[in-house]
Length: 234
Image (tube, rainbow, N blue to C red; front, side, top):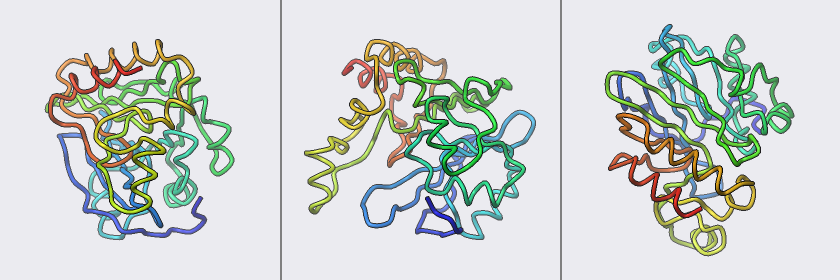
């Protein structure tokens, strides 16, 4: 957990659709990338998924998009900038999956869980079945189609070199494309059948254009088929 606004290297804010933006940043001391997704609700307010402390030009760009009304802390292992982001935007509600609430509240007060947050027809939050409420999904619908935002349940991380790359590939099973990692199977999934069925429903979302994951690359080529194939590995 960061206790001060600390900007690690990150890429520029990128617009993916009418109401969706993405920012990819580095993590200190490891080759894994982290991803912040931003959605604009029907009322114009912004929902920030997996908040990253960003530089001043990026914050100015965010301010130009709308007011940050909700900060989604998508899991108990994604609290790094939750405290400082909420301190920077204190009027925003903090929302997390119910099963992650105890861990999240160790660093920042939680206003609501995913199950308690109403859909506005544009941004919808769901808790993933079979995860004991520890993982969720954000669904954004706009004129460009449907965007699905997941957290740690699905990775899309390429292989990386070096000793850390060896561990990520052979021990953690985290690299090598779209997959459900060994860590997710051990720490997040409690009911494989239920999690598989929920992922299959998400894969069948009408007009699904992309799946944003919290680590590394967005799934943009046949996202529904790819997600269904990953679900079938459970």
